[in-house]
Length: 198
Image (cartoon, rainbow, N blue to C red):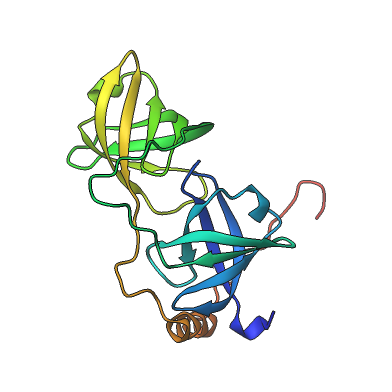
């Protein structure tokens, strides 16, 4: 792995909304490899937030190696009219949910998730509008969503992931943005003073 051609990436597993940091390398318009000690936890579809980009790039895991996974940016298209049932996975994720058109904000739990939706649990979900944004730990991008049903302090939500529009980021664009980030002046960290003399 050539360190000059690596870029940091946030990986979001679309099946269960889990997030972790990884290193992306061998980046082409068709895909890349990612390295992390957590890649073996990935299901099939992922979103990658490459350093310097504001949105996710959609990908599919096509191979695993030693703490590495190969990601293809070639997405599978479902045949029109085909409605496959997605696997729902039980999760326990604390999320912040807010209305897109009003200031209603609340903390709730995501208790199950799939690629295109999730189920929320929390008090007073009926106060939220139908159009919401869901913020999950580890992902600094809110996910646009629509509440499609509500019952007994639960709500079913359809997710619209924040993916980059086509065309995909080119490897040279990613490397250029990395270079720009490296050249920005770094903020000096304040020295922390400890009560224990450190």
